Amino acid sequence: MHLETDFYICPVCFRVCETESECHQHKMILCHAGEPGDERRKPVTDHLGNPVSRAPRWYLEALGWIEVK
Image (cartoon, rainbow, N blue to C red; front, side, top):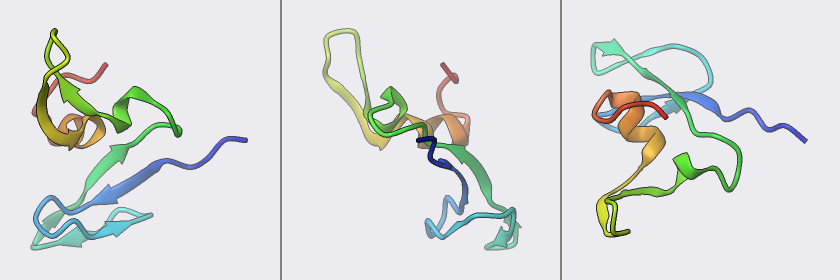
């Protein structure tokens, strides 16, 4: 079964919508969270496995802070 994992999120208040919208006078960011178990749902780690951020990879990719895999 394929689940819909794309959604829009406000990086200021984390409001989530299924369709493109505005929040805090800017467009919300499109996120691709991946299927359950996808690596993008896990926090980013360095080459030794230490956490770099508590945020999941999909969020950091959506903000453009890290490269999309």
